[in-house]
Structures are given as structure tokens and as C-alpha cells.
Length: 258
Image (cartoon, rainbow, N blue to C red):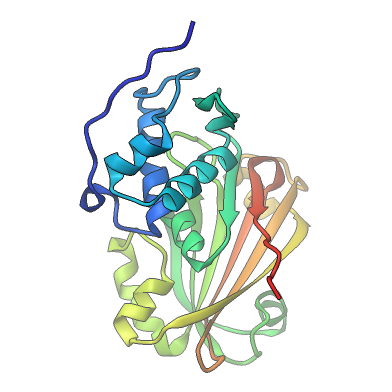
């Protein structure tokens, strides 16, 4: 017997949460309904045509939104059977899909950053090696733990290093809930054009182990992202340290047409 399907009210584009590309906003709206029980496990999502009409979007946008839900392990799709809501994986694992700079926005918006410290630091030899920045310069350091809703243990330890020229953003961070680099763009009129990411394996230090609720020496993934402006100047470096068992990184690669 097919599980019943609820019929939510029509949602216009203007009613979608504003952050991120349109397909991601549609995916979030459907995810909220899945989590909220509008579409229970085993139920079928509306057809592509129904979703197109409901959100006033193209078929391509519908398919991209459904792809995102599949990658988040919320639904499965089969030819002729439609899209079915599947049992969720453990909530202790955070899946982060990256295809563009906008997806970095989605990561920060979907979590909460609890700031521990905001201060100016000098890039000594050890810190310069860790960040990839030139030694001897002063940068604004913002550190804290990032949390996911309804999960007790922190998602990761986060370190921001912001160019001294943009250090004024530090005064706004206690009231700011989203990612920091759009704040730099808005305040100073400088556009972030490129983000270079490096991923390394590491071990959780004694200083972080208790706060992350893991044992000292637990395997971890360390993400270092370097944010560059159009002239190649570095505006910000971010380092996220994730216990390996709580995080899965997903990246989509497509063949370049020649």
C-alpha cells in the first residue's frame, strides 16, 4: 500500500528563504517539509510537473533540487516510481556538498557559530605555516565552535583569519549569524572571486578533544579555505577541524565540453 502524501500550500518564489541559488532554496523548502512530517518516510514527493507549478520554476531547477535531496540521503528516485522519502542517516554525520562558492554560504547558514574569541594576532612561524599566510603580518582572528541544530556535540572547531584591512567586521560578528565573507563584501565593496580549498587528515588535539566530545588523537579532517579577491589579494582564511566520524564531504565533478 502506498503511503499517503500530504498536500502543502502553494509556495511562490518570494516565499522561499532568500540565501543561495534557486534550486537550493527549493531543496531547503522540501527538506523542511520532510523533517516536519509533511512527507513522512515512505511517502512520495509531488511529481516534477507539480513542483514546477507550485514553486513557479523550470524543470531543470526541479531536477537540481531533487538531486540535492538525494545527495543529502533524504529521498530516492526510480524510473516510473517517482521520488520517495527514505529513512534518514544518523544525525551525527554532517554531509557537505560543494559545487560553488554559494554552497559555502549554505554550509554556514545551515549551522550556528558560537564565537569563543575575537582578537588581533601576529602571524608567527607556526601560525603562518598553518594558515598559508605571510609571517609577521597582523590578522583578525575569530575562533569558535560550529553547531548543527538538534545535535549536542559541536560539528567542528572553526578559525577565521581576516585581513587587517577588513578587521572592522569584528565589531559586528556577535550580532551576525551568517558567513563572514559576504559581510566583508557588503561593508567594503570588495568581491570574493575565488576560494581555494585544501583538505588534510589530522588528529584532534588535547585542547579540542573535550570540547568536541571526542578522545584525544581522534582522526579528523581539516579544511583550509583561502578567499581571494579579483586582484588575487587574500581577504580571509578559514580553517575547520571536523571529527572524521561526523563529517562527509561531497564534491560533484563534471566533464568539460571541448
